[in-house]
Length: 437
Image (cartoon, one colour):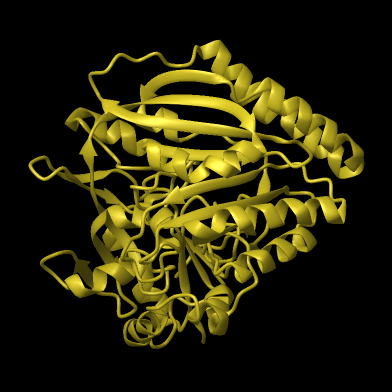
C-alpha cells in the first residue's frame, strides 16, 4: 500500500518518527486513495508539510503523507479577491502566484517556509493589532474525511464547520485545498530601530495602536529592544528596498552565518553569549526601507532553534515580559536567542490562541543543541499565570484538561472530532495529549 521510508524529523529536530510507509500524492484524488488505503489496513495517516512545527503535531505513527507535490494555484475569483491553493503550497511561493492578479495575503508570519495547510492548522500568525492570524483569512477548505470522502466547507456548504476546520490541528481530516480571502497587493514602509527596553515597555501599547504592525525583540543580557514598526501603503507607492549587499550582510552573514557559529560556541562556552548579545544589538536593527509586503513581513532564518510561544491578553504582555526578564537574571541563564513580542487581533477560529481576545505573543527560543526544558518550563509557568494559551505548533507541556480551561470552544471541537474521526484515523500521541484519546 505504501512505500517504505526512512526516519522523518522536523526542522527543529525536536520530533522524529520512522513511519510504516510514506505516500507522496500529486493530486487531491491521490490523497483520497491514500486515506482509503490506510483505513482498509487499519492504519493511522498524517499529513506533513514543511515540518516546521516544534511539537509532534505532524508525527505519523503509521502512514506519512508528504504534501511536497501538492502545490500550486487551483483557481482565482478576481471579483472577490479569493484564491484557492493546493494544501501543500509553501507560503513563500504564494506571493508569486498572487502577483499576476494584483493580490496579496492580508498578513504573514515572520517565517514563510511552511505549507499553507500546516500554517493554518497550527495557528500561525503575524503581528499587527488590527490583523488576524492566517487561519482567519481562510474562507473555504476542501478536505478528505476519515471515511475517504471529499468535504467542502465554505460560506455555502457546511459553513458551521469553518471555524473548526480552518484551524483543525490535522485532527478532522486531510486538507487538500485552501481558499483564502486576499487583499489588493500593497507595499510596506518599515523602520527597524533600537530603543531602550524600559522605554519600549512603558509605551508599547501606544506604539501598537499607532502602527499597522509593531513588534520587538529583546536579547537577554542587554537593556535594548530592537523594534520593527511598519505602515501599509498602496502598491503604487515608491519602493526603497534594502540594498542586496546590505540585506545579505544583515540576514545571511550576521543573522544566520555568524549567529550560527556563536550559538554553537555558546553551547560549549555559555560565557560568550552575553557579550555577543550586546554586540548584536549594535550591529543590527537600525534601518529604514519600503518594499513589497511579503519581503517586509518575512525574513530568512537558517539557524536551527526550538521555540515556545504563548498568547496573552494584551494587558498582560508587559507584566509577563518583565517576569521573564527577571527570571533570566535570577537564574543566571545565558540565553543566546532573543525574546520576541508580537500582537494580533481577535478572531473566531475555535482553537485559535486569539479566539475572541486581542492578543499579544511572547516567544522564547533556544539553539537546537541546547536542552530548552528548564528555561521553557519556567517561562511557561509565567505565561500560565497570566492566562496564556500555547501555540499549537510550538513546544509546551499542557494536556487536554488544562487546554479545555483556556479555550472556550474546546468541547465543541472535541465533539466535532468524535463525529468526523471516531476511529482516530488522523490521531497521534500529540493529539491524544492535547485534545484527548
